[in-house]
Image (tube, rainbow, N blue to C red):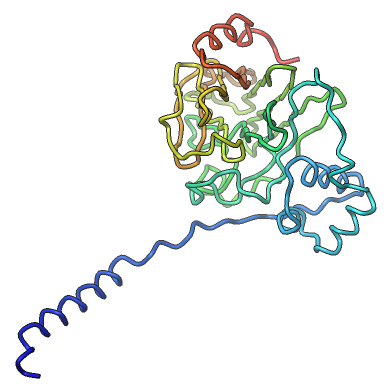
Length: 330
């Protein structure tokens, strides 16, 4: 036994060092995924959300439970009551506008950087379904965040403190207004009198967007930067966590599919910062409002579309020729 002591000591040291290393760098805990359920208040709302989740977003029963707070048995009974099955999903006309639906929540719209978006609020998010695959969609978060000279004035999830969380003021949950013409709009009044709103208008080849802000305070608002996010997790072929497949040509930001011949394109004017977060993955054409005097209203225009082809530069020029950034969303 003593003959081998010269190699036993290094082995003990090696094992001890390996154990220390393991203790010194423990495996990272998964990012917290928080879901605040919203139980539908009426049968009409229950039916709307079940059609949304089961027919279009293809949620599992577990995801519907997480979204609504209902039990699995309650969900099964409601699906039967409303006859919501894959076979009863309505057919869409070939010339219909792009399918846009409120994002239900429950399923996190990101793949990564989840600790940067805890408990995403659904009232700022819509799903825009791809024209080539009715199971694929991107989630547009508008606005994800609004900054001003006052600080972080609004945030559509839990991450860094806002001027309201610092004061322990909770903003009430809202829902999109779903209009008969297929458009969506939302208005939120903040505790200091600032009011902002969004309008989403699906058309055949694009989704036109408008974001406005009214200064209800007694002071001039400056540095009104906005973060609008297009999350790509649920669009097959676009979910790679990289920016190598993206083009940032202010104001246009585009993500290319793995096949190289399909694109997701977004733009906002006036664009302040085009960029993408590879971990999410997502696209940003982040705009900035003009400075806003008390009582005044300022506006931003947004665009989202899909393109099949290889000459995306020509597509940017075609989109620009539509005059989208000058026309009001109607």
